Image (tube, rainbow, N blue to C red; front, side, top):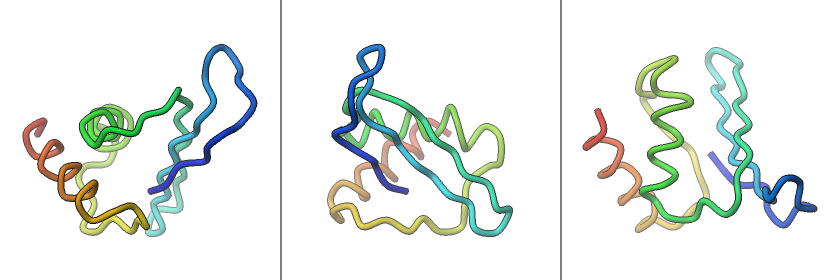
Length: 79
């Protein structure tokens, strides 16, 4: 789970939120304009990934621990 940032704007979007499922070999690319709150990321993850494949056992990310903690907290309130 990571972001590709600072892209040229297209229709007001300049960021891609990327989630890769190594086990099933799926990749999800969600375009956005700056998703940086853990709550917003959790909602997008829930709507675009979780609803299709369920909750992964692990998520690998180089995001800050506090961000990931808030992400998980928000994700579990959505479930």
